[in-house]
Length: 350
Ligand SMILES: Nc1nc2c(ncn2[C@@H]2O[C@H](COP(=O)(O)OP(=O)(O)OP(=O)(O)O)[C@@H](O)[C@H]2O)c(=O)[nH]1
Image (cartoon, rainbow, N blue to C red; front, side, top):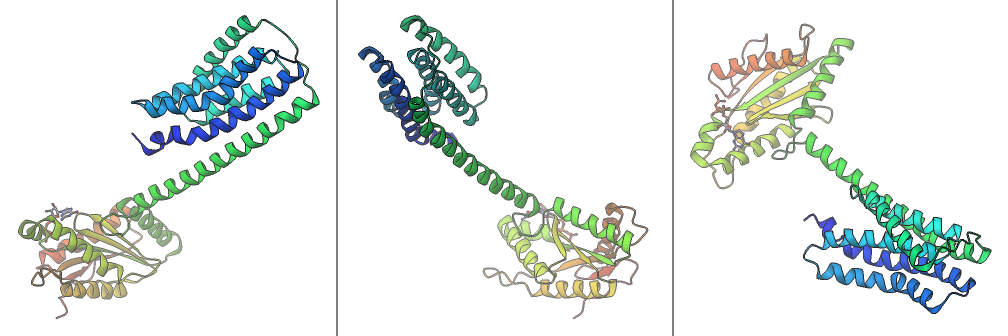
C-alpha cells in the first residue's frame, strides 16, 4: 500500500477532531439559543466530540485502515447531515457544515467518494428529520454567525495549506519525472529522447541561420567481449567511465547523450568539422587512458564518427545516418580511430 494511503488515518485524526469540534460548537450555540433538550445535546456531543476518537480506534484496529477510513469519511458526512434537522435547519450553519463536509470528501481525491457521501447525507438527513421531527427555523442570529467564523476561517486555511503542499509535491514529482526523462540513469548524460530534441534544435538552427554544428557518434570497441569476459557490472562501469570522459570534453551548450547500449552521441553547436574532429581525437585518446581500479589491465578503446550538419540533411535521421556512416568507417578501418564524414579517416594519434 502506498505510504500516503497508510498515513491517511493518522493525518485525518487531528483534522477530524478540529473540524467536528468546531462544528459541534456552532451546533451548540444553535441548541443553546433554542434551549434544546438534554437528548438533543447528547445527539450533538456524540458525533462532534466522541466520534473522532472512535473513528481513529476503528482504523487502528482495522486490517485495512484505508478502507475503514474511507468508510469513516462517509460516516462524517452522514453525522454532519443528521445535525441539520437538530438545528431546525438554521440556514448559515446548515449550509456551511454540509458544504465543508462535501469539500472534505472532494479534496481526498478518492474517486466517487463525494457521490457516496451525498447519498449518505440524504439518508442521514431524512432519518434525522424523522426522528427529531420537522422543525423549520432557518433564521440565523448574529451569535450563530460569529460561531461560524472560526469554522470558515480554519477550514479554508487548512484546505489551502493542504492544497499548497500537494501542488508543491506535484511540482517536485513533475520535475523528477522530467529529470528521469531527460537524463540517462546509468551515465547522467542526456537520455535519447531529450538528446534528440536538442539535436533537432541544432539542425533547425543550422538550416535557418547557417550556424555550424557537428555530431559525434561514439561506440566502445568490442564492448560485447568486455561484458562476456568480465560481466555486465564491469560493462556498466566502462560505460560510466566513458560518459565521464565525454563529459570532460563538452562545453555547457553542447549536448552529450547516451544513444544506446555502448553508444554515445554528442552534438556540438557552433563548431566546425576541424574543431569537432580534434575534440573527437581527444576523447578517443582519453578513452585509451581509462583504467578501472579493480581491473587495471583492461584496455578500452572507442571509435568515433564525426558529421557536420549539412543543408542536405532534411531531418535528424539523415544527420545521424551521416555520423553513423562515419562511425562505420572508423570501425571498418580497425577501430580506435576517428572518422569524419566527407573527411579522410584519421589514424589514431599515437
Ligand atoms: N553492461 C551493459 N551492457 C550493455 C548495455 N546496453 C547494451 N549492452 C551490451 O552492449 C553490447 C553492444 O555490443 P556491440 O556494440 O553491438 O558490439 P561490440 O562488441 O561493441 O563490437 P563493436 O561495436 O563492433 O566494436 C551488447 O552485448 C549489449 O548486450 C548496458 O546498459 N550495460
